Amino acid sequence: MPDNLKAAILANRINIYSQPTATQEGQLIGTAAAPYARSALRGPDRDQTNTRDLWRGVISFDGNHDQVGFVKNVSWDVGYTYGQVEVVNRETGVDVERMAFASDAIRNASGQIVCRVQNLQATATSTTVINDAVRGGDLRNSAAGKAAIDECKPLNIFGVGNQSAEALDYVYAQVGVTERNEQEQALATVSGQLWDFWGAGPLGLALGYEHRREQYEATGRDAEVGDRLLFLNSGADRSPVQYKSDEVFTELSVPLFRDSFLGEYAELSGSYRYFDYTTTGTGDVYGVNFVYRPIQDIAFKTSYNTSLRVPNLKENFGANSATFSFFGSDDPCTT
Image 1 (cartoon, rainbow, N blue to C red):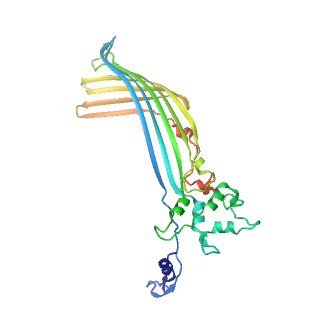
Image 2: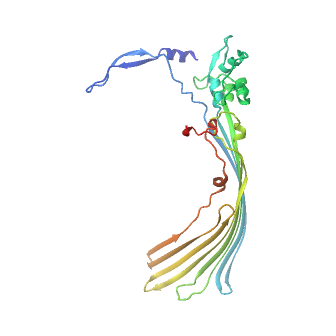
Image 3: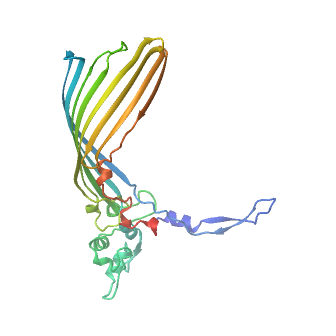
């Protein structure tokens, strides 16, 4: 401990106050020696470095035609998209077990500052047990426990900058996760105008088809965590998983009137989509919309639509993870 810090602790005093009353607060009546201090033992920062590499390729064709058969103002497009993204997340934090060992430093018989746990090992007899409070048994019987003893470097917990590089390297831990997403999409649409039955404007029709494939895989943190007790996230590997979907959709707009005694314009439109997912099966959604414009400056709109949200791959197949790996599979909130 630095001499100035030791002197400050030994000289520390606290104020003593008299008992307060209903009409008067407590009064300072003296001081008392308080030769102690509290160490919050706040370890190194817990930080993350994220690297994302994204690649995407798109090819598409489109066209417009004044008329194809009885359909006017025909527009069409066909496209294909392939993309992939790789995310590498490296996280740095504290090895809780090593932090406890490094901060518990003593002087050995030779006067050297050493980790208490190393001194226990050096002076152990055949019957000595160095208790492993978390894994159970003798600390020397696990690879992580034995390495934590052998590699321990005393850590000075007093004052910023008083820690050796060796001690910080000992208590620091780093784990990472690598995730890879891949997507393919093929999309084709065609639209045009049909007949104008009553002078309000032609019917509008659009048709389309979409095929999609999504794949996800990940290398989790558990392999690097092992049986160490880290103040870091955990998570298992995720073997490649995917889903495929096929969807067809259509939209129809029906002008009701234009420049009539009923108003300037009104239109009724509807949409329908049928889908087939390899994960959730088949289904459909639809919508109905109505627009009424009595005069140019005022419009009323109403709609009714249904929708379905399909779970993404991480929601369907993602493995459980924990914010603090040293808890393992046990949820401390359930005990």
